[in-house]
Image (tube, rainbow, N blue to C red; front, side, top):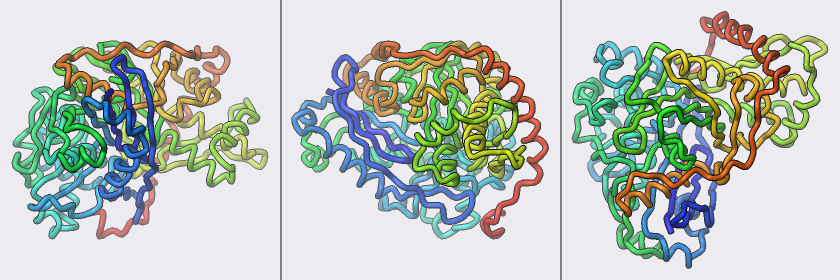
Length: 488
């Protein structure tokens, strides 16, 4: 039995998988996000730990006693800053926090080789700009920092006492030389840091500590190994069997990700592509990230006074098929292909005849068209992407799936256990760590598929240029009311 733990933005999930990779049991404990100002997004690491303990405790004690190894996954880019005694100095600044936009330009000034070293665009959600923001706005906190950890790696510290990270998660910090799979002294120096503040690096399928005796006893386990694990997207790919060049998946969670395994390290900064190490040795991937995907549906259900997202989806089916309202899904800024933390959401094209159903449908279509922008950016750089395996909670909607398949012009494929997400990939990495192999279990069997419907695909293709033109027309007019003394 193998335990996978995933620290998501909306909850912590614990999954038990057997030797064949099948899910035996799972538990989820919800989390909330603090937004003290526009663009801000924070969580308390203590909440992650409390939710993890509750999720593990919810699993069958008899099955817990059979656990041979644990794998970790988590939301990427979050900055957990610790003092000399490993005390958390402040709430973690999350991946979808956009306050550090000005520090992106500062980082490029401090280290003009940033794109060459990291192979990635500099965006506010990555970890390095957050530390420059702390140096500017919370200098007393910055001065006390002795260690910076990513969310899942802080959890590892609590579980094992070890400060370690894996290559995939470290790729999203802007401190890693992703091609070399090693920390970059130049990038750390640009942020006033050194290797002393960084965790050690391991591959995702390698052992990275053992449970302390105290935690093992509390969880009803032996002092089992903990694998290096992976950032959430790489872990999701492991769970879906997406490990070879040409294989790809689409994740519809809080964010929206198109993930494609690349033939080696292939950066493409000009198109906003993220080029990261995969969770397996000598493997890399490329991806585009929308900061708000299923999050847009949650928001729209609330502001349109639907009882829940399911009601919004049902109402959207009754909307007019005529071209009409366009929705820009940039509720938390955007990352790719527009690295723009100031981007905002828009409903455009409303008339007196516009209905609530039209607005709901526009949200579904707007996210789909944002995903199409990302797909085109990936393919422009050389990736040929065919069918897409589906992952994430938003992927459960067949109504939305039909719209997305039409917008992307690609088949969408659902496989068994896909809804389990990164926690399953973390459990697979746990098995690999203890067995000393780098081969994932086979992907689950296909359970459903959506092919693009020709008429709907033609209509979405007609909308796409209007969608893109709207962002271009508005991008110089975004306004935020965050205090100016927190943004410079």
